[in-house]
Each structure stands twice: as C-alpha cells, then as structure tokens.
Amino acid sequence: MNTQPLLGRTALVTGGSGDIGSGIATLLASAGADVAITYMGHTAGADATLEAVAGHGRKGIAIQLDQRDPASIDACVQKMADGMGALDILVNNAAWNIGIAFPDLEALNGEIWDQVSETNLRGPYLLARAFATMLKSNEAGRIGHIVNIASAAGIAPGGSSIAYAASKAGLIHLTHCLAVAMAPDVAVNCVAPGLVEDTRMAQRVPDDMAQLIRQEAVLGRVGQIEDVAAQVLTFVASTSISGQVMTVDGGMPVAMR
Image (cartoon, rainbow, N blue to C red; front, side):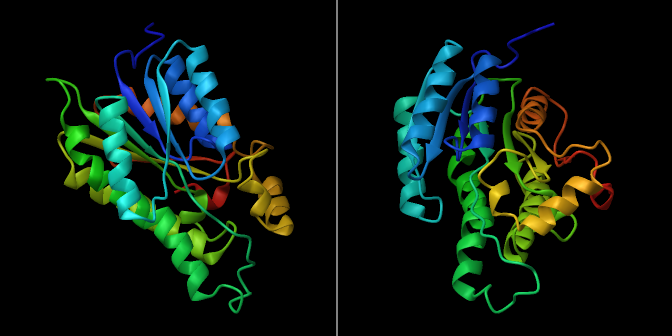
C-alpha cells in the first residue's frame, strides 16, 4: 500500500489556520504533499499548521488572503507561483458564519448575507478561476483536483443561519458545475460536514440546534475533523471521481440523499 500517494504534489488549503483546515493540511502533508495554507488574521493557527506540515518533512508556506477581494486572490496566485512553483490540489475550506436562528429574519440583514455569500460561495469560485491554469498544468497522465468544503446545511435546512445554509447549497452545485467546466484536466469534488465537534465554527451554531443534531446522528457522534480530512485525501488521491459530494455527519437521516 502506498502510504504517500501525494508525493511530488503541491496543495493549497484555504483557511488552513482553522481547525478543519489544519487537519486537512496536516493529512495531505503526511501523504507526501507540499502544502500552502491561507489565513486571514489567525497567525498563531497558521504557524501551528506549518509546524505540523514540517513535522512530516514537507515544505509549507502561509499566505494571508481575503478571498472576498480579487486583488488579494491575484496576490495569492503570485505567491503560490513564487513560493511553491505549481499547484495540483486546491481545497476551498475557508468560510465564514454567524449564529442567527432561522426565524430571526430581522437579524439576518443584507450586509451579513453578502459577507457570508461572498466568502463561502463567490470566493471559492474566484479561487478556482484564478488557479485554473496552474491546476491544468500537470504532467501527462495526472489531473488537478479541487475539493470544496461545503456543509450538510447545504443539503437540508440547518446550520448557523439561513445565509450559511444557502451559501453551502450554492457551493455544492458550484462543485457540479466546475466538474463539468474543468474536465478533463481537473476533478472537482465536495465534502459536506455536518456539525464538527471541537471547532470554532461549531461554537457559532445555536445551542438548541447543535443539541438536536447530536441527538439525531445515527452513529451517536457527529462529524470529526479526521474524517473530513480523510475524505479530502480520498478525493485527491483518485483519478476517476468528479462531481461528487460526500457528507460527513455521523449519519443524519435528513442528509441521506
């Protein structure tokens, strides 16, 4: 069994300073990839992730990125070219959410909606567009990969807010569209976690909703960071999977579609 299926590959994980992003970056490094990460302001988290990547003997760099800003995305592309030289794998993990109960329509104003949508849906599209040339420039017989990190809230109503759920539903369908648009050079897939314990994102889900999710998970446990990361690795190590969505949520009946 090849324990380093990504040896010689280069990956970029957005939001790599966070809990899930760090888990993904670390696992990709353990599988042989050199890994760049992006971060907004959580420098300590970014440093910790780079230390974990280096612990697997792989090269890593951190790039500050605001994926709502096209100029920041352009700068990220240039830093990847300068610092890593290539890109085989793009993991669109960075996202933003805020806890607003679904019935509280008054609290979910246009400004919040735009920030959620621009970060969670527009940003991944702009990044895929900006890195398309690099992702397609692989050696003969090897394809590029994009993995979008969506949410079970994009499959069935739930999550931290209506805006968050709608943005993740859009990201799931963006996955399908990009899988068509970027074939045959790039495979595009999606992981849709439910509630993932011990993450900052999970802390923004309203308590009553989080408790209901825990009760309904058929395995008696909700999503785990290591399972999300493992599914990303499965996608990027494959050569014949594209346009697919895998839910990682402990078995929520509403997402079994």
